[in-house]
Image (tube, rainbow, N blue to C red; front, side, top):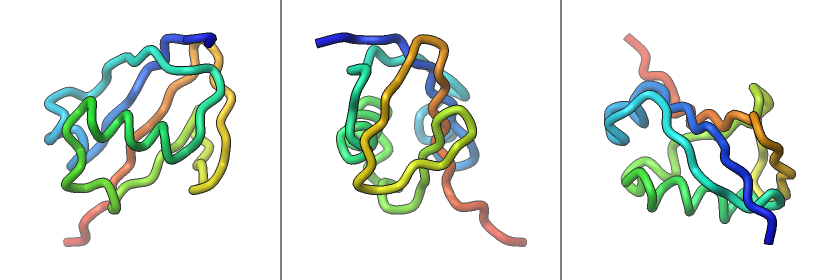
Length: 85
């Protein structure tokens, strides 16, 4: 099992809930979208918004059901929907 350190970036509500704007996680180099989202939710307490955010790797949105290949230096952004008004 190959692990890689990945930077996690938080925006808007996810930043408030996680209590930081960025952090790092040691993740499998190959990981499913669902496993990645579950790990981020459990590690940073984001279960309350789990159905309300998208993930992006290196500024590219990733979709449910996809398998992601991560490399050292990659960044994962946790992007909740922006509230209007």
